[in-house]
Amino acid sequence: MVKRLLQIAAIASVCGTAWCAEFSAIIKDADGRALPDAVVVAIPTDRPLVLPARRSTAIEDQVDKEFVPYVNPILVGTSVTFPNSDNVRHHVYSFSQSKRFELPLYAGTPAKPVVFDAAGVVVIGCNIHDWMVSYIYVSESPYFAKTGADGAVKLDDLPPGSYQVRAWHPRLIAPEETTRRAVLLTNVKAGVLEWQLELRPEKRTRRAPVAGQRSRY
Image 1 (spheres, helix red, strand yellow):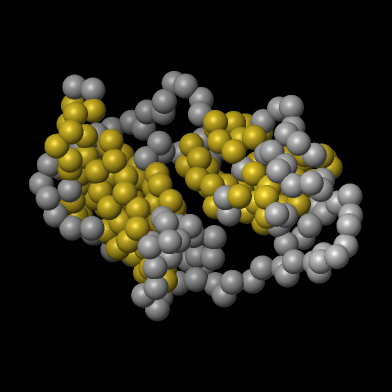
Image 2 (image 1 turned 45 degrees about the vertical axis):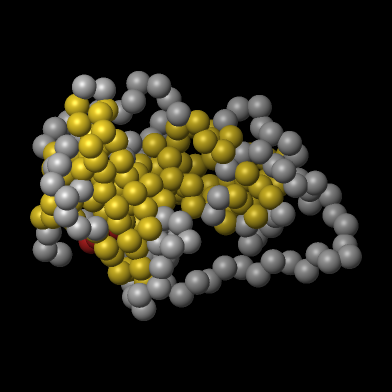
């Protein structure tokens, strides 16, 4: 895929002693519909990638027998807590290459969070409720964000310079690397990045019929 060099907007705000840049992106599916739950990541290419010294934290909740949020982008090294807000027990696990772990059947909040120490996509499931699936996107860069219902996203507080920007979605057909764009962030106002992604059909396990039934699980 041919890389495109774009000049996009930078904001007139101060980040420490240096000007900070920002850019916006729109993610759509192949039919031009706005695509929520897509992750956009920017990697600097003209200087070393510097991560924050302080480890961040995040939450992946369980509500009404669903993981919330469905897509959870985090920075590598983040500690994630998996509270169970349901009145039934869950058994949370992942067999993904970048993070394998298991939280045996439990209620409430586990005593220890899970540290995601390698970049990559981690698929989360529940061993009791097969339809419960979520995705934790572990970014190697601190510059990332997730699209809302309108398919739009904005990344700000970026140091000006050259970046490689890419987009990801759980149903993306092509490898994530094929979405890469070369971007130059300056203080010159220009356009908005836009992707149209080819997606696999949505195929999620149907929820079990639980109306009128009671279960410990």
